[in-house]
Amino acid sequence: MEVKLLDSTVDPLFVISMCARTCYNSRQKDTVMGRESFVRGLIRAGHESVLENAIATFDIKGISRACQNQVVRHRIGCSYCVESMRYVDVSEREVVVPHKLFMNFPEISELFKELKECYSELIEGGVPKEDARSILPLATSTNMTMTMNFRALRHFLKLRLSKRAQWEIRELAYLIYKICSEKWPWVLEGIAYEQ
Image 1: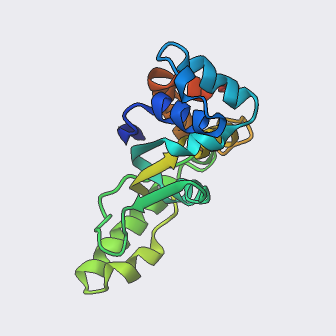
Image 2: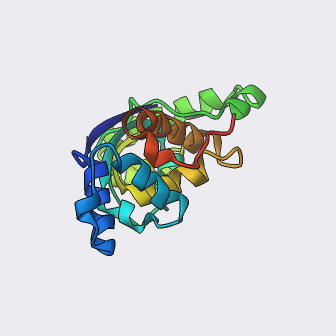
């Protein structure tokens, strides 16, 4: 799995601060040095709606279709572009196998290999990719881009960094968390990764 930041609001602290200060008619109080503490205070007070004015777009590669299905359940303040198995030949794709599954059923790798071979044979035999894909497992890897406003991003991280989250989406959330901690540590106010 690989996650990269593609783009984001150029100066999210400025944008969020200006938007929040609009509410209080206090833009004249804005200072570069005071923005972070102001925004952190808004987050602690539960006034997170102003975070919707900044966005981040992530390039995500090598997650399973199962994980991708979980990600796109986050719908408010989010936008996705997912690689289409209808048009893209995925016969050479890796399969994301949960470690516990592989440890308990090592023969699963052979089954996945057979399914990929069958998929290739179907396509070579003239079956459209959109029909041939139906035999592939949810473990087939895919790529996507994900844009979230900062409020939605915080919500995603709160839910998906939890030990209760499924292992793969938790790993994805952790990689996004690392990017945020480097770029915008203030957006993580009150959010922690559970070891």
